[in-house]
Amino acid sequence: MGNSKEEIKNLKDSLNIEDVIGTYVELEYKLGGKCLGLCPFHDDTTPSMHVHTGKQIFKCFACNEGGDVIAFISKIKSCTFAEAVNLLRQEWCNGSTPPPQHVARREKARAQKPAATPAQFAAMEAENVKFMRSMYGHHPALARIHEVKLDDPSWMDGNKYHPDCSDITQTYVDFEVSQAKSTVPSAFKAMKGRIVFPIRDENNRLVAFAGRTTQTITDENRSYTPKYVNSQTSDLYNKSRTLYGLHLAGEPIRTETFAFLTEGYKDTLAMVAAGFKNTVAQCGGAFTNDQAELLKRYTKRVAVLMDADDRGREIAAAAIAVLHRHGMQTSELLLPPGEDPDSLFRRIGKRAFRTIVAESQLNGHLQALKDSTGVDLASLVSDNQSSTIGGSFGTEGTGNREVIRMNGEATNIERHYLEADGFDVNGTERQAEKSSEAVLQSDRPRLMAKEQELQHQMRKLGSKRFLFGQGPERMQINTELMKLRSQLSEVSKQLNRPVVWYK
Image 1 (cartoon, rainbow, N blue to C red):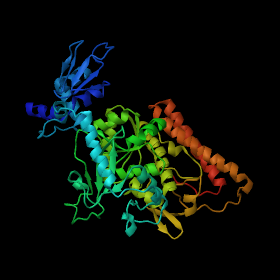
Image 2: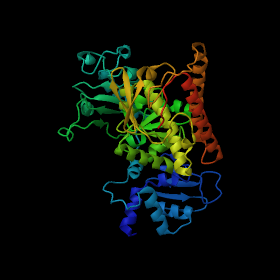
Image 3: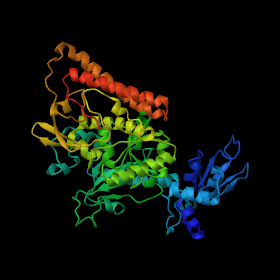
């Protein structure tokens, strides 16, 4: 691959210098398109390195080091110009030279454009609020009405929009999901008749909307009926710098010390409805450096949960790469093939969905350990259950039972096990047989309390594992997790629970 002037120019035009430098130096953003940080090239105690996002250069006013993004990499990696170019290509451009840019660099335009005044921001938000209040919104009482469906004429009777899933309705109320009328202000005409997801920034300002069509997308209408339309970029809203749901997820993320990252608005709503309030979604088709920096203000640990299809896996891999560039720890969670959080929640219900996500968290931890060290802790468990990494399953209704498909084989599970209070299960190989050593009824409360305590300890350890890198502490945590898992199996067996098969 050549290093012609044109190729070098294309490479630099494709990069944001603050993103590259930000992986080595903690930058503080200032007005006027500038950032400040401690210079890594001398013993700096006060921020003396300036990064100009418009000019795409850096300069330290203490040691006089400066230049463009290639000069920075050459200096910090102690490598030649050509080596720095190749490193930037590999880490930021998937090993290739980006094509010529046909528009001005985003950050340069941002630096040159005057920022909106507070009054202008307030006026733009006021227009958004006015539009939201004009829609067929949620009435809080509707959250208690399970019978209303989207095909029921009453669903659009006054303040009545229902997401067609009783377990998720209150979350749609909380997130202000509504339907736009057939007549809307010209500025919002793209939203006409669509299910509208209001988008608030991390400061709870109403900055934009995403509108989802109510039509079924087919090959015939796909070209002229987009599934989603979004508000245009403005001073108030830039989707590459916004995370859906962060205004409500910020504190839960700090409390849980990690965040779930999903692909779409409905996926986040399903996760929140299931109790995972530390969930956000990327706005747009790709997770960006700006979104990573925004999320990093709340946590450095992210569990990535995208759609279980080829595109979802590509999006997850890209998001994980961005997060790693920003020094964040990740865990990739896997759902049954073809599913997404919204579809799975609606199909199997809240309790079973919660268990699948929790199990996926543990499996993500174990798979990461196996990938990095070659140690397969799951294979070390030798009890009366099967433990494998990467299995898949789904459900289909058969009378009063659920059929769980695991690795392509249909198996049965009593529905009441999925719905029983205080007990979650994500799948079974077979219905548990009546034990000849059935526990006495008087002993069940003690065992059920033990069961819940073991589940609680497993969740705590799964979260704690994020805090450690590869090392003895992390290995110890995983060993403890597998011991707890084995104990939980024994308690469940005494309670005549079905034998749980983990992915």
